[in-house]
Length: 84
Image 1 (cartoon, one colour):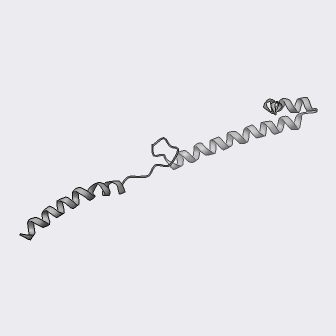
Image 2 (cartoon, rainbow, N blue to C red):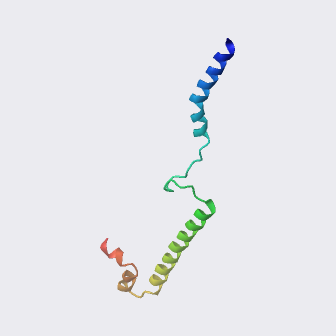
Image 3 (tube, rainbow, N blue to C red):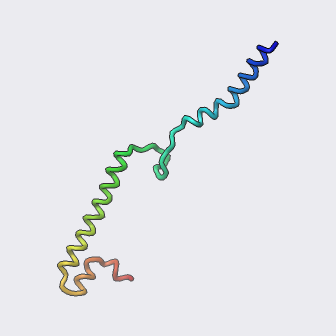
């Protein structure tokens, strides 16, 4: 008589806790990726490319300021600064 009770208890246990086991096996997705897992190396290369682009822009602005001879030329290097 104890064997059918154990089988029923086992089935109920599996029905209740099997979804929890499936949830524990899901992979985490980094925030800001739109729900898609990303490759670390690709993300790293993308970030380095963005940094290189910003460095190039700053070097261009620095050269422009260094070559300026008066305030008008210096302000022309960064026209959006005139609005401040």
